Image 1 (cartoon, rainbow, N blue to C red):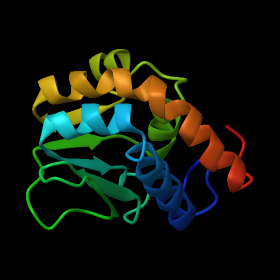
Image 2 (image 1 turned 90 degrees about the vertical axis):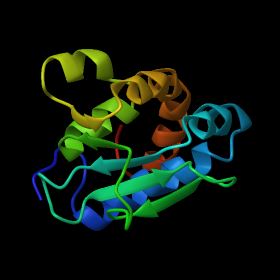
Image 3 (image 1 turned 45 degrees about the vertical axis):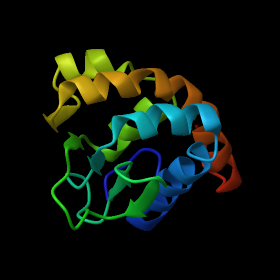
Length: 137
């Protein structure tokens, strides 16, 4: 796996999934993500075929699961794992990254724009998870 931040794909997936599981325990974040009512797939597999996860906000409870979803996602976010890291740690503006092609998407761009405010709320959680794993932000 080619990454400045992660030594192996399992750790990367573990960090992303744990971050989102903690994030959806936060009422404000869960409210924003829950309003999407969509299945969002984070496809970071261009760096390693194992690095992906999805967030399913279609039901009452928000599910965060490693790997690709069984159902077709409403939105797929495609990026390298390091770009994902930079976005979640609030080091990268996702709108600019999309405009420059560093982040690509399939599906509803409107849904992605609704997620933009969540990044600032998730960043501290993401940094906490990284620190708990001994990974520098």
